[in-house]
Image 1 (cartoon, rainbow, N blue to C red):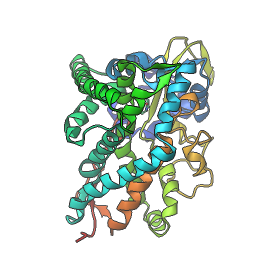
Image 2 (image 1 turned 180 degrees about the vertical axis):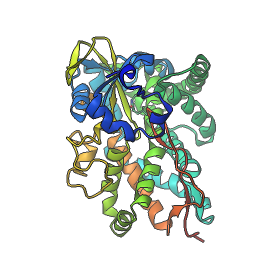
Image 3 (image 1 turned 60 degrees about the vertical axis):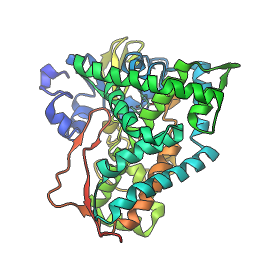
Image 4 (image 1 turned 135 degrees about the vertical axis):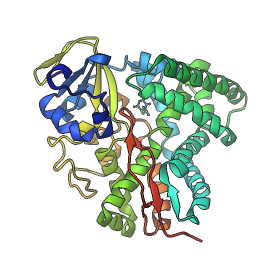
Length: 406
Ligand code: 2IO
């Protein structure tokens, strides 16, 4: 069914205000929704999204050539295929698991402690703007080995790059702004890369600089693109996931009380937050051949958007999908952070998120630090909850009151 038939558009204000209200309609009535203004197809059923993400011959990541490469200043991991992809993915995965992950958890703890300290005595904080955003950027800078004093400019450039990657429509003026941010970020990174090639440390940039692929080291362009790739992928969803976790727990006080009593339940609460409200709502692919879904054919060459949020609430995949329930038997907490996940918030297939274990550890660590100090946590008087974003989506702010800590 098209916009002409229903008047429905994913680009409308109504959809943007509360996408989940339209998920059932899309899955049942328009599982292959075409959006003429951007000539793209939107798939909302779990089965169809899973098929697109795992049939790598029929659906490729070629779309990233226009959607990501211009601001990444080169190819991102998700664009690569074959042996090159396998080798570079392994390099990045190794930097986010095992002993490297243990170091990163200490960085997460130190960053969270430093940012929390001045907020606790006030008994009030905006979990997105006072804490989550600076936290996400500072943790990412630390794991890349970038100077924390550069956080304000890197954060501004990151916003421009992320805007480019996650916009469905972009005016020429915004596009210019995003490209400016990307070019300045690249100019900032090049001397850092030169320095790490001469004098490597144990940060991710050094690892990328010294890694060899078939006996050949990566070029400055390759390293730059992977740094910007990690910057966006690590920073952009982190504050959103943290704020969504607290929102859902505050909205479900009995589940909040259970998590407080048993912090081992945090992993389930994070997994259910990711299922219920994925911070990355859309995953683009290019159809390489005509493909039929539920009787509708998507033509070869078309851009296809996988609607992760809608797929995660498909009743064919989860029972009572519109209920937030950290105890749901079909969640499979341990599986939720692996290739066997039933939710699709980390994608699926060859390009499934490389930061999955890091993401879990990061959010689990910071939430375990916040929960005990946010005693009597509640929304601040007059706070109005608002989310934004069609591609990445999260709360604009989360104003919280709690018992001041002295
Ligand atoms: C950065 C969109 C936040 C990725 C992207 C160009 C590639 C890829 C994703 C995620 C999350 C970001 N796509 N991470 O969806 O690396």
